[in-house]
Length: 482
Image 1: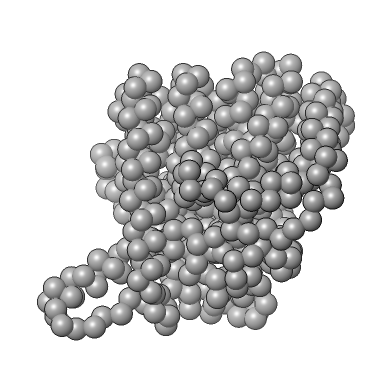
Image 2 (image 1 turned 60 degrees about the vertical axis):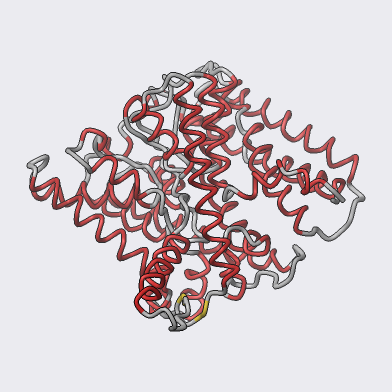
């Protein structure tokens, strides 16, 4: 383990991250909303701690190996999640306890979108902007790590992308070639954000709201500047724009890269994971919209708009709302929550288990049925035109088993914290899948959750965002042995 190099990286990350607090400080200064000192103090503390850490190990130079990669990825969100809570702790307009401030920060950076804050419409604009910025920064961090680093670490079958991503390394070292990958992905991310901002603005949002909601849409975060989320605007065009950009953000950014580079849209349909994703979400949206109309919950037009919007919002683990879906009839609320377990494609900003894993599991199930009918047949498992080896299939099944075990364990712990079953089930689903809104007592926000449960949910958000194994591997004695 190269601890000095890891410490240097974390120190640099903290110094870079501290710079992001100057942007909302400038917003606070222009808006005169009284939050300038909170951001400036947070900047000094964050930059100072990062600078001190970097100074002690600034001369450390070495190429990172796989174990170092696990530790860097885990520390990326845990350390930044902690320091990101400083403005929430220091802002006079919030007066949040430590658990709430950390919960809000971790929720933002992991693009979960679960919030403990109410009265968003009356908060200082700089605090609102900072929440959205956290999600946007977390989103690009997720993409770079998911596309360029996790495939190298071999997390839960995601090594499928090693031969397909735009320039990642092909060995066990984390080399500077990742820099080129990160730049290409960041440009796509930035272009999508700009396009989304302009679309929201033209549809009737203020420029401030357009920027803020574009940040959380492209990051698939779900934070809003209003308590009523996108329902505040009462504008079907805004819901349509959100639906389109949520779907785009849920596609593997490596596929966006290939499409952008080749200038040919057929790359989307040629990618088997993207096809599976589009078909699954479309089917769920038709069911939701049809059932809302049949049960006369809304008019046929509103059923179509709200059914499609909420299905995409929850399936992609964004978490925007235009109505209270938790009171929808019969199976719809639970059905939509279950869609978040699939989430978006691997290499996207979405949470959940990822479409590629669900697709592989379903293909494996079909293959086993065929094998029962033809016991002696050799039936290969393929993704697109590529044969999937047994090691990758085993990794996917292992990931699924550990994901479900983690889900059940967190569910039981939350119930031990006096949560009712529906609230505990949806809170676990919403945080582990980085979705945000749940059912029962967490349908609107997580303010009523106990302090202990909030720390458990912070762990769940990190666990889901770090693809389970990245965090759990740190708790194994073998990881720390030389």
